[in-house]
Structures are given as structure tokens and as C-alpha cells.
Length: 458
Image 1 (cartoon, rainbow, N blue to C red):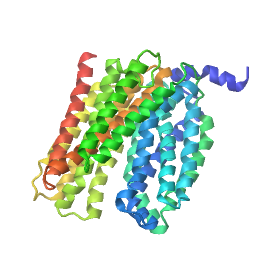
Image 2: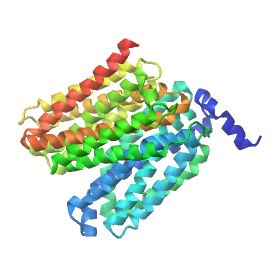
Image 3: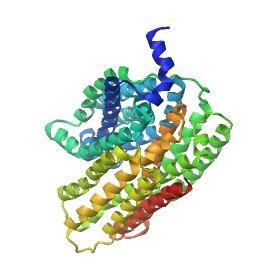
Image 4: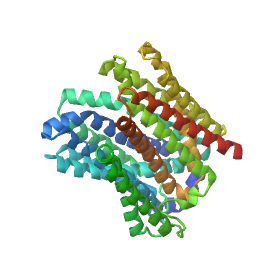
């Protein structure tokens, strides 16, 4: 037996014992660096959209396709990439995702037109989906089970810190150079992560072959959902029709997959109460957070804050998430996770309600503690909820769990954005931010109650 074969044969035991300390450190660093790569890229690109529109001489409405193409690719590919990880091995899929993301970043940097840039961003999204779908699965095979909560906490802290740093990094790059440098900066980090993938655990592939028709139905489902969300502000009738078509695609996908032992959409995992409640709570919490983060700039602008002051106020939120995620990760492995999630959701709900109820003439500085409470609540919720989701799945189904985790997050974010869009279309501009914050608080409270129900049943 060769050394490589021996490592691969022993891979299933890695979930029980983890890697050796030195190799474990490199493996965890590779996963966290890949998350930083993906999250920073999203932050800097959002900031650069006006600059890109001016440089390519395209309308502001058209440049949004740079973001939409990426989001569509991620949503369409998360579940298939998770299934590929189970079939081919998580390390192979992860390395392929990093390679594709890095190569697509080069194509973005060289893009001479919007069409080229949108196509390259779609490829970036496919690579990002591969990274996100199997990243935590690789952490599960890299660390011992009693350290998984800490690893997930570090992962959440990395994402929060990069979310906070993204706009500042983007502004610095645009100050020093042109927009292609935003994508070129991905190249050294991506190549570094690729070199580190050799330290990642080898997991044995196997199981059923992936059904091509199911992959197409999955892609159609999320493409229709995103298209409906894009059409909602201007063509609400078409948006409803697209969403009805998405429901039909979902029904067809479930009917096709329900007899499979390892379905693309993880029906076997969703049949477990702990997994299903973690997914529902995640969708609600991310929807509440996204609705609030979209509404807050309008509220702060109405309060008379400048763009810089608004940015500084809102930075409190992700920094608090990072602190809470790092701290809670240290004891998530020893504390009932359902109650941690419930407490986090309740804190987020209380913070959002407090912001919504602030008097219009209140000192804007009084919002900072409430935004910190929101961030602490979300960080307290996220780490134990993700741990619950992954521990409900067997090691062999970690790819499906990772794909479902990412899908729940993006579905929640899309739901929050659609909610605010609907409010802007049906209520006054002045009233919408506070109504959106109240709705966000209700969604966060729902996440808390769903999590608490898991605690009572367990």
C-alpha cells in the first residue's frame, strides 16, 4: 500500500481524531484563508461597482450584473459541490474551487467589457461555491470533535472580520490603483491557499453518482428565484410567475431525489429535527440581519450622518460578531447549543427592536451599543447553530451539510433583501427603514424560538 493510499484509507478516522497538530494548523489556516479570500472579494467588489461602471462606460443598473452573476453561480452550485465533495473527496473539490476562483480572478482583472467581467464573475461564483460547500467539512476532518466548535468559531470570526475590512480594503486599493487590482490581489492569496491544500485531509469518495437532471433542476430552481427577486421592483407580476416556476422546479427536484440514499437536496438530513431546525433558524437569522443591514444606512442617513459616519457606525456590527464568534467557539463544545442559539437570536431581536424604537431626534451615537448588541447576538447564534447542523450529519454527509449551510445563508440573505424591496415599494421611504428593522427583529426572534424548541425537545 502506498503512503497516499494509506492516508486515504485512514481518512474516515480523521473525523474522530483530527490531524496531527502541525498539519492541522496548516489545514485550518488554508480553510480560513480561503474564506477570507471569498468574503473580502465580495466586499471590495460591492464598493467598486460605481467605479467599474464609469471605467467600462456602462449604466449603473447594468453593472449590478457583476454581483448578480456571482450570487447566482454560488446558489446554483452549493449543493452540487457538496455532493461532489462526498463523491470525489472534499480536498479535491476544495482545491479545484480555489484554482477556479483564482483563475477567474485573473480573468476579471483582464476583463475589457461587461460581458467578459460578468462571465468571469460567474466562474468565480462556481469556485466560491466549491470552497464554501466543503470548507467546514474539511475543518471537521482536521480537528478532533471536541474542538469543532472552536474551529467553527474561528471560521465565523474570520468571515466577520473580513466583512468589516472589505470596504476599507476596497477603498484603499481604489485610491492607489484602478479597479482591476481588486481582482489581481486575489492571485497571491489564492496561490498560497493552493500550496497549503496538501496539508488538508484526504477523504475517501464514493456513494451514488450525481444525477445530472437533478443538478439542472437545482440550477433552475435558484436561477428562477434570483430572477424573480431582480424583477420584483419593476415587474412584480413576472416575479410571481418566476417564483411559481421555481416552486415547480423544487417539487420536481424533491420527487426525483427522495428515493436516493444520498440526495442532492439533503432530504435525509432535513428529516432529522436538529438539522431541520438549524436550517430554518439560519434562514430566519440571516434574513433578519440582511434586512437590517440594508435598512440601517437609510435610517442613519435620515438622522443626518455622513457616509463616513454611517460606515463607522455600521462597522460596530461585524466587529461584535467577530468577538462573539471567537469567544463562543471556546465553549460551544461544552454548552447546550440550542440555548446558545436561542440567546443569540434573542439578543439580535432585542438590538434591532431597540434601534427601530429610537426616537428620530435621538443622538445617533446611542445606536452604537444597540448595533454592538445585534452583532454579539448574531455571533452568539451563528457558531453553535453551524455546529449543530454539522454534528447532525454523519462525516460522510458533511458535504451535503456544508452545501445546505451555505444555501440556508444565501436564501436568508435573499429573503431579507426581497423583504426590504417590497417595503420600499409599498410604504414610504421614511417609514421603510424602521418597519424593516421591526421585521428583522421578528425574524431573529423566530430563529430564537425555533432554536429553543430544539432545546426543549432535547
